[in-house]
Amino acid sequence: MKILITGGDGRFCNELKKFFYGKNIFYLSKTKFNILKYQFILKKLRDLKIDTLIHTAALSRPMAIHNSKIEKSIDTNIIGTCNVVKACQKLNIKLIYFSTSYVYPGTQGNYDEESLLKPINNYAWSKLGGESAVQMYKNSLILRIAMTEYPFVHKKAYANAKTSFIYQHDFAKILPKLLKEKGIINIGGKKMTIYKFARKDNKYVKPIYLKRGDNFPKDSSMKIYKLKKILKN
Figure 1 (spheres, helix red, strand yellow):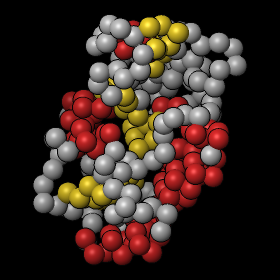
Figure 2: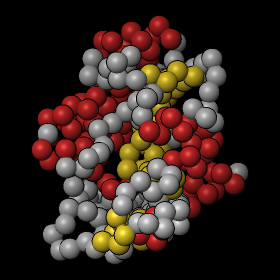
Figure 3: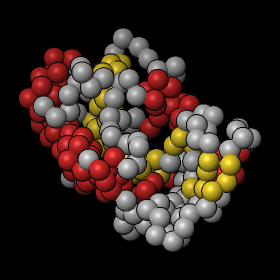
Figure 4: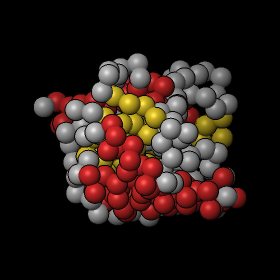
């Protein structure tokens, strides 16, 4: 199996490379795999004879950029993903897409893969836009991920917002076990406040609190029963 991974110089891929590598695994950065150029994508996939494409490339932080530079957000996360989907469909390549837990409403938490979707901010809308294209292609796997760096990199964390964070290096160990799966899988860990999660490995993190009207999910935690069942089997 030949695997191409977009966003090859990103934070997550730097962790994944420690566990997942070989002569048939290609990590390509934006300069080597421009997702805004469809014909370029098509040629590269044909030349390398790719069987599976893992699409991690995305515009994520800072969150505010998805408000100030909407065009860039749309181009990268929606149009770029659509180009990848079309190329994979044309060549019958398995596609694995990195989405986010923020596509859920973020109000009550404990979302499973069948829960209704309602993004709370532009970043989540951009990821759902890409996910919509992937949903149309059945030879695909969508991973709705709640993931962060180790140790927690921010100086402050919400003490009244809950999530299901998993560290990047922990997910990097799991991803190779999911390559044959299709459909949608929630990826995360135990439900807790972001502040409590952060304090586990960074005692200097200070608590802050969401206020009414803040453009951030109050509870984006997910059920991960499906993931646990797959890993157990």
